[in-house]
Length: 169
Image (cartoon, rainbow, N blue to C red; front, side):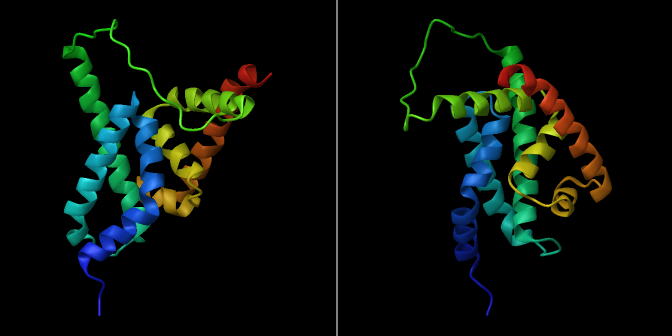
């Protein structure tokens, strides 16, 4: 007997929520936008789940939906930014949850900064790679060939290494 749709969705969300949020955070300009992207992704997953045909692994499908929502959200955000007046005088403080190791935090921030400099396609590839997806699954999610993913990843690693060298020395 197949699993009820609601149970499947809740299980899927429980196992992949952190991965989904990391991807959303990488495409978002601020924490609030990341939360908005995450919520929109969850909504789209729920709405699209009944049409999931099982032609790919469900996690591959989740990544594809997540990337599509994030890319669409990024374009909408850019459009809104052109029409929005910013109030830079209002500042909100963030309350840190845990005090991380300063050296590790600096390295992670440098990596995040370098990833943000990549174009959207390269950023999508590296984020999926950092989620430990094999090239074959990345190819399925992005629609590229596995060989093309391997070539692009080699170039992306070179770009990131070049970007990170000054920060790590």
